[in-house]
Length: 218
Length: 218
DNA sequence: AAAACCATCATATCAAGGTATGGCCCGGTG
DNA sequence: CACCGGGCCATACCTTGATATGATGGTTTT
Image (tube, rainbow over all chains, first blue to last red; front, side, top):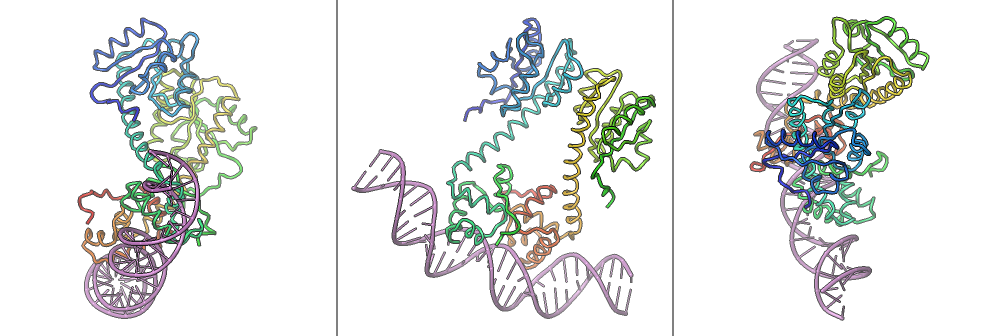
């Protein structure tokens, strides 16, 4: 497990701003509110360090000298992470705001911002982060179990969760019914599914349901 | 069925703006682009008329004299509809944009806007509308079937999709197993589920799974 | 009052699923 | 080489589920 850093007591807020003064004041303010804070002058500095995994949210300036905060936000979106992002800008405008929000930003704050506004935004971002981590943990567990299946077991799982009977699965895979039953039993055990309903929900979450045409169920 | 108006060839764009000139120019422009258009001077006029159901998207001004476009947008969100909304404003700012986007707006365009920008926004809104209608139809079908179930059938469905065996369900509901089987058969037929996997997915979509503690499966 | 519907249960039969035991073939690894 | 694990199959036994037929009692609607 890589990202099992405790987000327990203090949430880690990461700040990227090229203005040292902004970094300093944000850092002291957020610390005084009980958050853990790390600041960076550039996206690269943030990515290089190991904080990205532990971060609960990212406060990101748009104008970063050579880099662009909006581009970086979209880049983050492109990777899996979905780290909650709060954008701040001294020269923001409406199209910029639209773009940021479409990319999933928590909010967009013009500089200078009210401390209360920032605090509210942080609170929402931290809440989103909790959601995100819960989802990720659950799905990582499932994925780990699924990866532990053999190829045949995956085949059978796809068809079982599509609603086919063992007999039909056997036909599809050119197997005997008893073999299907064995694979089925094994995959239920490996996936830790207590019932078929469980397994269907797991398959749904994993996106591994087989598309089954209505014309060859038999 | 109420909302089975064909959104086939021409998508209906509704415009709410208190400025008659804006209404006129938007209407002629959008018509020239092949859209059906209806314009309104106030939210009330829009709601009163029957167009709300047929509309593919709504172009909504923020400053409406006595009314507020953002409030109205949130009011729409509060009702079920989720009609895609494009906000336009002559005096927009960043917090307003954030609020609109958080409420699910397709975009926020400052007035005056480029025709191309509006066209892109409309295209996205129409695409969202298609999604929305598809989802709604599907879920309305499901809901209609579910509403056709008797109380007992709903009970059984909740427990079946939670993964309990007929025997356990019988215990829970203080029934004989054979009665459970009858309800089960009836509900499978009424829900038009071809397999248990089907039914589980339907229950998932309907949000009717019973929460089953691990300590009383038997 | 009759009809329609819901809910309940029984008996009986058949199909499907679950599990155990045992065996065979193959490919990769210590 | 011997061993292990994946994949395959069989027989056997038991449980679970599906369905039909038949029956009783209640409520609501016509």
